[in-house]
Image (cartoon, rainbow over all chains, first blue to last red; front, side, top):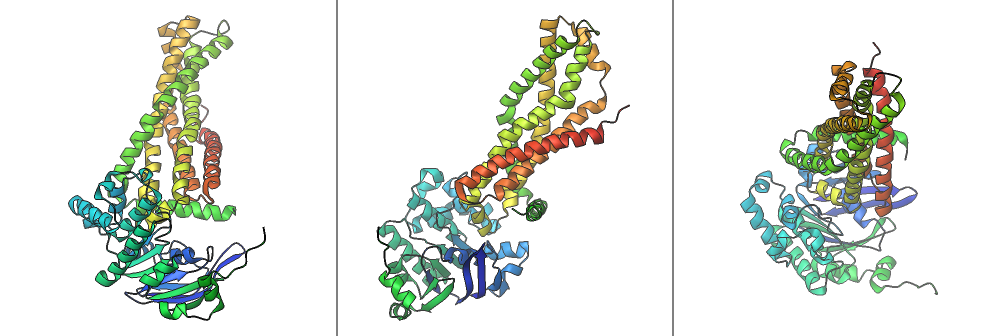
Length: 248
Length: 247
């Protein structure tokens, strides 16, 4: 379970998170919606300890992330797969080596036969041909890099997966494949996921609950049907794109 | 940036590296690769600069001293100037540009494209994968490059002195030996070692703490070269003061 309690974070004068409270149950998929620049990615990075909140606490599996020592934090991170917005592939390594690094169990990491099999399996899961494993990241398109990033995140069979805009920049077919993959991970392996996204359609299809983060706070949270009917003005504005354009 | 904050961050990075030394299986193969890359990759520029340095030192020594003092002094001057000062300092400054800029740009790009975050998110220590191999490779290879530069510069100085000043091999060799102390060679290597530490640690730190995209990478790269060059010059003075005692 992931518990986020009164988490605040500011960068200089800009308050990004202002007392965020959120709990994600085991096996749940939560979609975190919100306008750009409202701290959704910051919240994901805080969960994995890449950013330290100014106030509040984040507890994963009963462990306070900010209080964990180096080794314990590495162990916790090994249970969490993180899908970066732009893939964040290591450009000095080929696709296989990138995915192999996702094998957080050292025995599996050192077993090259298993590593090759697992890399091929993960590539197929994200609709990529296993032959891609020999390519360098620079030889891949943006969408392919993103999918390799997802393959790397799930290679170690993590308990949690944090997705930072998993389907942005993907064509509709591949977006649907990633949505289906998230559903399979939840249904077959009981993976707990938090998905930061702007893809409203996809989040309604895959998430158990949807939250809207705006103004540094979670202003609405609930199951998709409930969220769709919410009367919270920010939710209505977000779903109906109810904004005024400034005159040219 | 607050200087105190920067010192704290630098100390944190060094502490992480000390902690990462336990991951021998991770850093050892990468250190070997990196040593090969910077050693072989820097050889051409080191040979070029050292051969010109040796040659010019011999020419200038001849211009200043022939006719006034014994010709063998050219041998002493070339050898001592190269080994004590020109070899290590010029190699240090050139490598601050070549290796320092590369490390800062590589790590800076990895930082702004979230590759370092990705490594951390996979429960792997960036210090073992990225920092320790780079620092150890510099500590191993830069002193070796300094020794090569010393030999090549003295050699080209010898050839130049012989061909333009007419000095005999015996005179040059006598001159090279007469003021030579065993410490001189070690002093050159020690300087190479300290310069390697300055180049690698500063450039890794600047790259590792890069912010704000391409502009930040540019700033880190320039900062790494300038800071490590200044540090090389400061270390040059400090080491001379500490190690070279007048007899």
